[in-house]
Image (cartoon, rainbow, N blue to C red; front, side):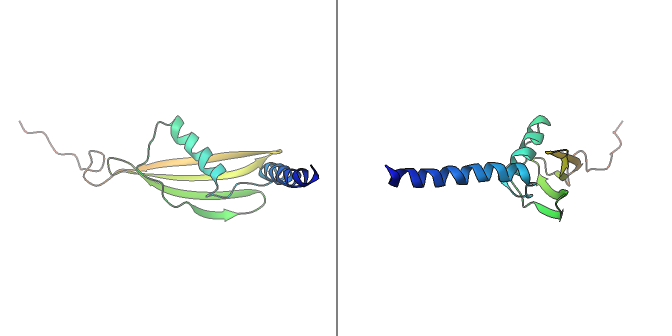
Length: 117
């Protein structure tokens, strides 16, 4: 019985440490925690990028982690997302800004053409 209890305690200890560590540190830009949070933002905005792109870490400190990613959209446009994780009291918060760049050859990116009479 002791032989089973020791590995079980070790596994439980690792799981507890990981949970505590997530609550004590800010997420890295490319962590599953950060990607999940960003995915929720995109879901709320009803935006579906074509594929995942590498996330750049702009800066990192104990107080905040700043990230940036450019995601391609179906119509050739791109979505530029800058986001920062920071502490507010004892909880991690996220602020973000999103800008959309029209693709070449799309209605958004084409100059206006006068209508024919």
